[in-house]
Length: 140
Image (cartoon, rainbow, N blue to C red):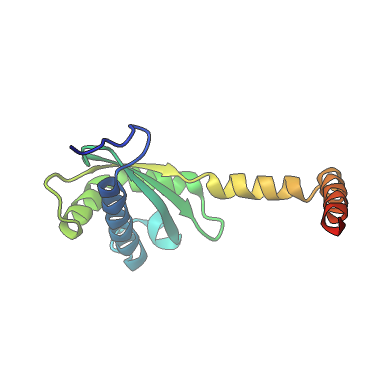
């Protein structure tokens, strides 16, 4: 009998299909196949695709590169979702063509914020104090 994965963890199949969809979308967007000014003038990174358990819905996380206008890119992706869905269905062999929902990936901004917090004088002082305490432990 197979053990079911918990509902919060994606299955291997969901991860594999998500990667295939990510690669397909990245290829379409990088080749400039979509005839939209916002999409052709801004390089876009497809950072992650999360598939639903039935593989019928895909949450696509994107990030415009080189300081591109996030809202304009998101609007253009939503406007061209039918074309993108068709291209994905041609490139990824699935029983059903997954619906695509686009969202801006905020993880880069969160990482930058954490990095800036770690570089503040207050945190640096605390980290230096921890390092000095750690050196005493190694001498014993």
